[in-house]
Structures are given as C-alpha cells and as structure tokens.
Length: 257
Length: 255
Image (cartoon, rainbow over all chains, first blue to last red; front, side, top):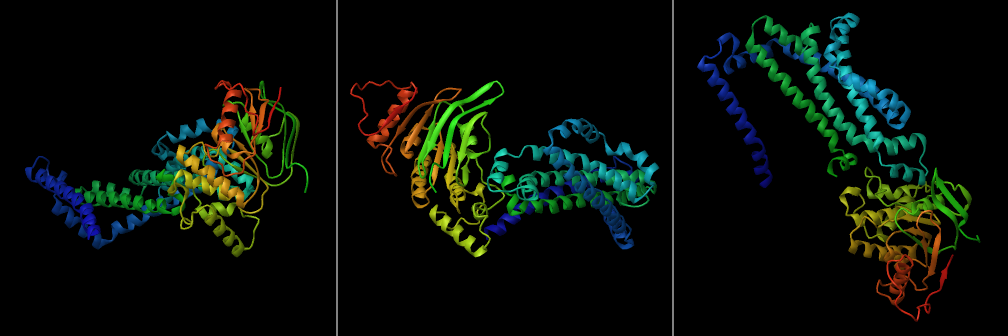
C-alpha cells in the first residue's frame, strides 16, 4: 500500500514537469515568436517520430552509435584501468606520467577530430578512437588515485594473512578500488555518449550524430527533435544500467560510508 | 616448546636522524599479557612493528617463536568482505571447507555475532567491528597476539565492554599478548605486566606486574593502585601516600 503510494509519488511529479514543459513548448510554438520551420510543434515531432519508427533508419543509427560507444568505452576501460593500477603503485611512474596524462585529459577529444579522419577515415574507427580518448585518461587517472588512496592497513592485513602477488591484487587492491572505478565508469560513459554524437556530426556517414546533421541539412526540425529526445533518453538509460553496478553487495561500502 | 615466545635484546631503532627506540630489552613469557604504555609518539607502534617482524631493528635482536596475529588501531577489516569472509581470512590454512565453516561458526558464537554472518563491516557498530577483528585474529592456530590501540576509536562504554570481551576471549583462546595503548586504565585492567616507556627515544622507564586474575573490575583496588602508580611515573599525578603501596604487586623500577 505505502509502496504503491511511494511509487506514484516518485512518478507523478516528474510527469507533471514534463507535461508543463510540453505545454510551454506548445505555447511558444503557438505564439509564433519563431518561424514554423525553425520551431516544430509537439504534434509535428510526434508525426516525425512515427515516420522514423516506420523507416527504421533511426534504429540503425542508434545501433551504430551504441556500437561505437561500447567499443571505445570498453577499450578505454581495458587499457585505462591497468595503467591506473600500475601508476597507483609506482610512485616514480606517477611522477613521470601524471603531467602528460593530465594534459591529455584536459584536451577535448574533439580537437583530435581532423587527425582521426586523416588516420582512420570517416566511419567506425575514427569515432571509436575519439571515444577512447574521451574515456581513457579519466579512467586511468581515477584508478590511479583510487589505488594510491587504499589505506595501508589493508596491505598490512593482507601480508599478515599471507596474501601475495596475484591474490593480493584480486583480493585486496581490486575490491578496494572497485567503488570508485564504478563511479568513474558511470561518469565517463556519459562523456562518451556526448562525444559520439559530436564525432558523428562531423566525421560520420551514419549514427545518431549523423542523423542530426542530416535532418539539419534537410531542414527537418521535427526529426531533429525526435533525434534529440532519443539521444537524451539513451544517455539516461546508459547511466541507469551502470548504476546497477553500484548495487553489488561487495561494493556498497564505498557508497554508504 | 620452551623459552620466551617474544624477546627483545638491546633493541634500538632509528629513522634517519630520529631515534625512536633505544636499548630496549624485554622478555615476554608464554601466555603472558603485556601492555606497553607511554607518551604519545614515543615509539610504541615502532616497538610493535619490530615484534611483528614488519620492521627490523637498527641494532639489537628480536626473537620470535610462534605465529603472530595483529589487531590494528583503525579498521583493518576488509569492507568488501562479509563478517564470515573476514573471519575466514584467519582460517586460511584450513583447506577443508566444512571444518572452516565450523570454526567460523564457533568464532561467531564466541564474539556473540550469530546472525550477522552476511553483514558487511559498514553495517556494524564500531564495537561489533572490533569484535570481528578479534575473531579474525584469534581464529585458527596462532600463538602471539599484537594489538595496536585496538579500542581507541570506540566510545568509553564500548571500550569498557571490549576489555571484558577480550578477557573472556583470551580465556577461551589463550595467547601471548602485547597490547600497545595510551589508555592506562585499559593497561591496568587487562595486563599481567605493564611496561612504561619514556619520551623519545623510548627506553623502558618502569615495569609493574599485577597479579589479579582477569576479568578485573576497573575499580578493583589493585587496578586503581596500578593506574595511580603509572600516572605518578608519567608525572601526571603526585605520590601523596607516604606509606607506599608495594604490598600487593611487585614493582620493578629501572634506571
């Protein structure tokens, strides 16, 4: 009973806000401040959505973009986490590498776009490269910080109870950094989703970013809004999926302390 | 097995120009409970690190006979492991899973945490966590228990309870114990022998034995007298009693 009330309490207010936003949208559209071609009505967007759903083109673009993000993100995690582990344990390596990693992290991956096209052409490879760059440095840096912040007492305990080498890594170091790594993966996944759209707008022949550019070129502002809604919704879904990782019972300590 | 499980022979330890310990000799008998007290920063933890073998002396000799377990000042439990999994760490030598499970159950009963098997440390109170630490250290076969201010992070009442708890656990699982603490009450209530260290570089200033069986009340006359003696030694209380109190425990002042 009370759970039902709680869930309606959780759903109704956000729905009301969305409804208010659509009402505002309709009002602005009806007021005629913007030209019809520059400001589609909610109804036009709805029709555009039906059109996209029928043609299936948007679906293909969505799959393409998700594929690129998954590849770039997975590659960044696969290489960035080990690098961070290494840097976190070796003070000397940290001193040597930290400035350059910080440099690249603060360099927008989009600035690499011309080189990405020159090296990899227009398509999957250059998009994946850019997404990789967006995620790799933050993941490596955050893993490094997490490792260097592991309380020394955990390693004392590991030693006391005879843990060494690979066992120390899998039983102490990795579980100790996991909560922070999961948080970083969540943040960088969002970043990757932003980057893929931008990358495809410039260096794409398909994908959601390309669809946005295509609609712009065809002056189809109704489709543009459909695409924006899809991009935003997928971003939210990605984050919700990664939040599930924080519910693993052996990482809860990292979020509840 | 005979001889002393823990022995320090003219042990000194310096860190660069800082001399932490100077010429410490200490012999601890099997099953003895020794508390080391002294001014903060005097090298108590250094002493413990030498005893555990984590650190080596600059000069002198440390001999150790038996397996050492350590209980730490701050949370040494792995927060990503449940109570059961943390205690299992102390039973790693036991390969038979059934036997391991049986011993874990026994430790849980001993620390009165049945029903908390699947809890994680952050879901427990400070006192419960420290009980799990004790269970982990006392599980399985070990001989020597080294404790580095194990109860210092707890509130006063919980600390008092933990002293009783420790007395009871040691009754069931006898160990040779070295407890480093700044809590003189704790030392007087628990230890068979109290070693008072000087300011850095730490030497042994004073030793005092208390021959009262555990568990002892905090207000037991011998405990109170021991506290007074130590505080006097540390220059915090004055010795107003002229007819000194050497009656019920041996004191052994060193120069």
